[in-house]
Figure 1 (cartoon, helix red, strand yellow):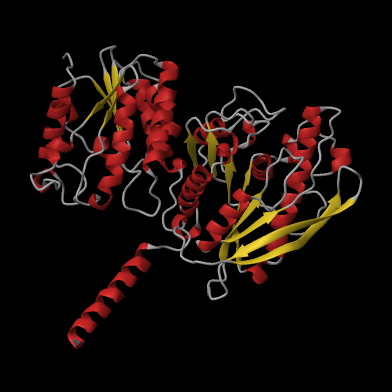
Figure 2 (figure 1 turned 120 degrees about the horizontal axis):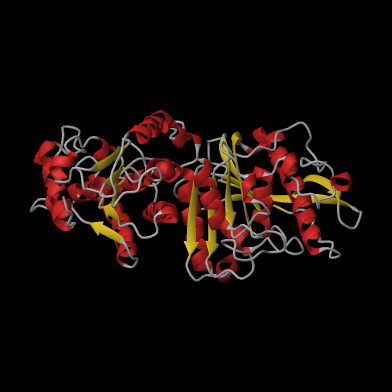
Length: 511
């Protein structure tokens, strides 16, 4: 009997230990409850009616038992077209509580409302201007009171809903030189405003845009704060693209995502196909959005970025070498291009293995799809290949900065879109991300990404998908070790021969 009880106790301890190990601060909800404080004054300012208005916010924190006192802060700014709503709403509650349970300090703020209707474009632009002045004051408030709230001032992030996200985008990206001419600075003052807490920085470490848009996407420049975007593709209020405008706010989530990729700003994009504004106020969709936001924001935290910062500009030296080669190498119209990461770069016998002489070999080892998205024009546009083959396998690696399968898919679509701008009908083939022993723990996620890309290729003209896992997995379903180098990741000479033959057989090429 004692032995049975001891066994049961051991099983219980193992289960608890496994559960705790599977959860990770800031990534998972590790607390069941949160502490809250409401109606804290963070500043005051003159509103549209000419009255001095007190500015209030609510704070949500992990329970008092939490010993971590240098936590990231996420500030939420509500929507309502700059005319209505308050800091207490269903989406703000969902988001603030979810992130606080993950270990963040979160806050939801009120700001000055009101739109001068004499000129709707001017009225909305100035309403946004006042809102961003108040938002900056809230950021400064938390820097001023960082110790009291247990905040790491180098990790202050902002998010919002609709007009709130428009405000966040202005806070993060609009400089004094960007202020639209229709805004009366003489009346409203500088970007920083005078809503309170002068003497502290209003800089933010990142933005999460929920169904908001910008007056000018070019406010986003190289070196700016990272940006994650969420929107419904059937939004009839605020554009997710640039097909119409909300007053003078024309550039929505997908345009901003593309802009970030073009200038090298870390970014992400979660579209909800067929969903409307605020994701139709559907709790399930909004909760899904929050989960995606939390997964992305985790990759932007110091505990992750500090380990291995991977900016796109780290490849400039390698790409410059390709720039030089592009000027001296001459290829005929029968040349094909192989583009991608280290699987391509290490393939020294590619012409023999594939059985095709004229190959434009463009691999830069260790790159991910965000890197390819940034450099794709410099890599592909100087040539006129007959076909292009692409392999990029470093977005899901069992690491802290892993992208989700849907983020890999969105990056693939962007790269294809960019290539299509110059080569609308050129065959493009995605080479399935290969299984490997080193990354076997995430093979399920890699497979999900592969399958998303496969389905997209099958439903679009001149896009192709070549599978290869059947050649590299044994009867036990595991990678066949004889085809891999000692690093248990890359193919060896024999592996490349198998890969090349597989490509040659599944893509009939003329020598």
